[in-house]
Length: 414
Ligand code: CTP
Image 1 (spheres, rainbow, N blue to C red):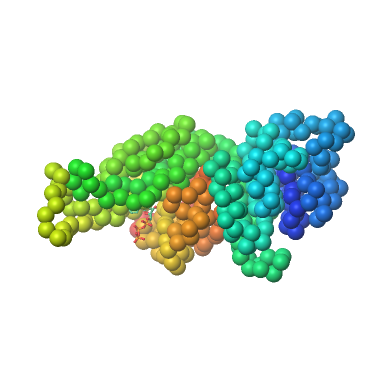
Image 2 (cartoon, helix red, strand yellow):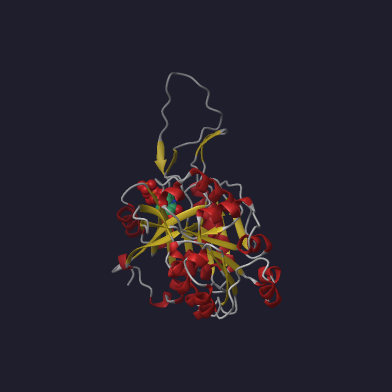
């Protein structure tokens, strides 16, 4: 790790039974070298004393907007400017509502407005409150503003209910913050990422395509570039800004995407990530002229498109790490694991597209990381933050890629 060294983190604690988990979160952040300052809401102080968090953070806890003594130490504006990241955990439904409205009626919310640092929220509440229309609308507002969301998790709740609303575990909260900061871990590495849909023409005005927004792939490219990689993003038609430092190649069809992947693999690739939603089939021939309507029905012959990531995984020399994405609606792990083995991928990142709150066009995502050792869930978070986590993990794999041997390739090249 090491990229939290000397980072300044404010933790805003609000009133929830899960507040006790913050003690461990502070410990993890400080152990990684971060300086931590704590703000507690009035509600939080009903669950935990400021003295506990003062001992753990090593600094007096800030509780009041208009506290003369605290303002003489580090005033709230100074505190807001000091931060490299502001984490609010647990974030109650009320806190999310007040953040969404831009309220500034206590120190915790005022600091959220006053800080230029990225804001992270880790919601925790009763499952019914989390699922309510009001909370959903507030979360959408916060996500649209670029707030990073960590969790919540599903499971048994303090109130006895079962469902989504549990505060993420300290180790997950820590990992999300840790992954946010640039690491430079991909310096000198070459990364190719495919993103967005492909568009398969039927005639000059019609095509077959899908709803992929490209957001995940663009977020991955940004994270890879921030980690220092020479990053090539090969994308279908999307309306997204090219991330800084990324070479963007626009293509339309799967065949063009494959050509671009081959072209940019002329020099060895360290990491290939296939996040594109490649059309599996294309019309056998695209009509040169617009097809005129005629009888009551029309038949079109579709033929298979090349499997781009499959070809990349068999290329010689092969990228050291090949990562696919799988969109599944049922038996997520089994289907994705089968896909990983069939395509000879090191990792497949699977997401459940049957869930309406995440996936294709949303800004948030929850995925399962599947490799030869099994499946591991990554807590729901923004696509930007998820991208950083995925890139961080890939960098970890690349670090040990000298001894990396794809488990399904025995005999094929060894
Ligand atoms: N992929 C690819 N080329 C294709 C199809 C898919 O490179 N022609 C890549 C995707 O970018 C993704 C992975 O393969 O990384 C899985 O894609 P997915 O569409 O979920 O799998 P399919 O193999 O198409 O299987 P199915 O549609 O039957 O679920």
